Image (cartoon, one colour):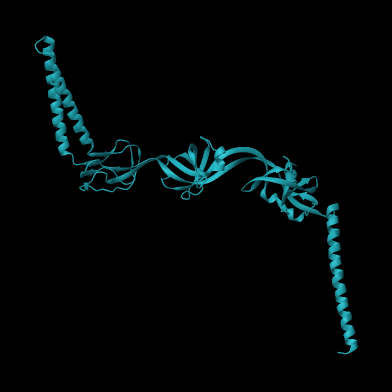
Length: 363
């Protein structure tokens, strides 16, 4: 390339450089002028605001718990004998005293009839000697002998009745039966499991709570429990007992609550998510979308007349859709919930669509 060509190339490069520098300067200056115009009200941003509201906030302790039956027993016979009849079905609801199993009892029934007959004979003999003693024709010693015979007959009858009761397996309380483990005609050994029975009208819910929350727990507090088997369903109960000891390994305490289960939906052994409502209070709240984080701090834009003013706030508890505000705003303020990203650091003049709609509706 000759010298003239090199010179012309340098001139073109210099020209391009100058053009780029000018464009950058124009953009920077233009942005500054735009921001100044925004601050002076040269541009108006359309936003939507909502008022600061007072809501109820609750301090909630969350834990996992296990459902237990109010009463739970594995039923078994007290004697060994052949099963005569099975009088229940799997999962049946029974009442206290209902007969579930009958064992062979012919021998016990015969002994019962014999004992009843002996008792009647002893009672007649006692009355006869008693009348003779009253007439002076028998001694009191003879009456004492008949009294002893009468007592022995009564005791023998009670013993036979007890043996007959051992040939029955009955429900010890109202509840739901589990799966049947025996069949008619089988030889049942003493203490062999027959079925289970659970009183599930009231569920005992045991859960662990970290020791730092002990001061906030007390009997009678409300708990809300959920289980994956019933999505969206909330089971409410109350705390009945707080264990007297803290586990030195987990540094937690066992808390027991009672949850009504009138529909028999809950079963022993279910894993439940528990929330303990320890305290409640009224606090200022704003929608989550109104909060603008910046540099580790939290801000909102408050609409004052036709301007949006940025204010730093201090947050409290967060709840789905809204957040508690401890400092920085007051009840009745309107905060921007749509259009916050167009407001910049200092805010600009705004047109609040929420108030426009309200004014239009009132007119």
